[in-house]
Length: 277
Figure 1 (spheres, helix red, strand yellow):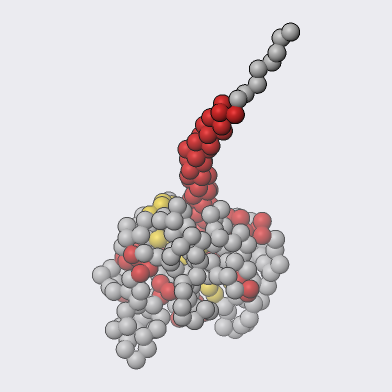
Figure 2 (tube, one colour):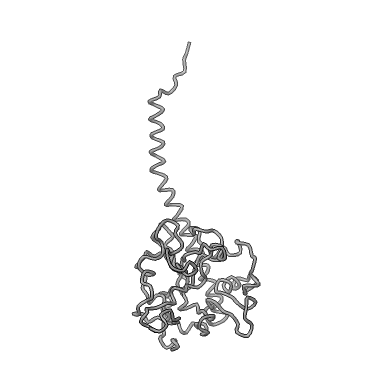
């Protein structure tokens, strides 16, 4: 009579050990590949934002406002932001906060990063206030194309820290408020003074923005300490592989950079004459 021989306990344990070893080897590789795909998707979204910026700029002869609120008609009926203006440049209806209120999250896919901590919110990116002007704060006109010389060097939009308070719904601040704050010595009587132009060699209010960024741990999107309504607002978010953030430049190209690789002058406009005392 023929008997079927089964696995011995030792053979079974050897097979299980080999499978566990293979999983241990392959899992980090698969995780790394998945994150690389997410980062590539994020860069693709930034490039699409770059295309939208180009469409808007060609139609209007100036860059989008970061924020804008018509003084003659204050309130959400006239308030808008750069992501709404760029979304509208692709033919989508609505440019004000009121007109775009209640839209499903899918309407904002272009402005999202797959690696972001929170999947919700209108945007996971922030714009540099040096080029996307905050008209609410300073009333300055938008930046025209002839005012930009180093368009391949100047950052317009980047991976930014999200806000975990209920009102933000997980979104980042559309405009990088913290980049508008310079060295305390600028105006001693008003250390938080808004300045629209940064000289290329000027000191910044928070050098941490250019050295280590916000990421103090896995999926940490808020700076610890300080006012919870301001802490970490619109800082860089090194969310890709914990050490990389993606940046969009005014010429439309997007790239990944590690902390310390970009310079302060890459977040400044070109002409110092644009500064208003």
